[in-house]
Length: 189
Image (tube, rainbow, N blue to C red; front, top):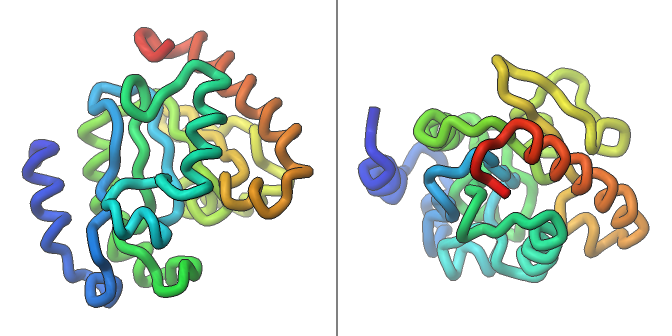
C-alpha cells in the first residue's frame, strides 16, 4: 500500500482520462489523515482547480459553516476529497468514464484513512458510493451500512446555494450526523 505522500505524488501525474488536459491542479484532498469522518464531493470547480483544494469557492464557504454547526473542521477532524480529482470543463457533471478512471484514487485514500463514517456531498457522490436506486431528494440524511462503515448523503452545498429552501432539511441531517459521530467516533468531536 502506498503512503499518503506516494499516493498524492502518483495522483499528480495521472493521465487516466482526458480531464488532465485542461486541469490547472489536481485536487487531491484536504484535512486530517487520522479523521474518522470522510466527506466526498463530486469534483472540483473553478476555484478548487485554481487552488488545488476541495470546496474553497462559495460552496466551500457554506460547507465550512455547515461543519462549524456540528463542531467539525476541515483542518482538524475530517478529511475532504472528491470522486474526480480534476475539474470537468465548465463544471459539468463528471462523465462515468472520468469517474471510473478516478475512483481508484479515492479508494486508496479510503483505505489509508479507514473512516467510520462517509458523508457524500450531493447526488453524484452518493450514487457512486452508496449506489442502488439512491435519490438525493428521498434519501438525504438516511444511513446506509457498507461493510461496517456508515454512509450518509447531504445535499451538495452548491445545490443549497441554488435552492435555500433545502437548508432546513440539511440542518436536520447535520444534527443526525453529529449524533452518530458522537456515538461511534472516538476522537472526532
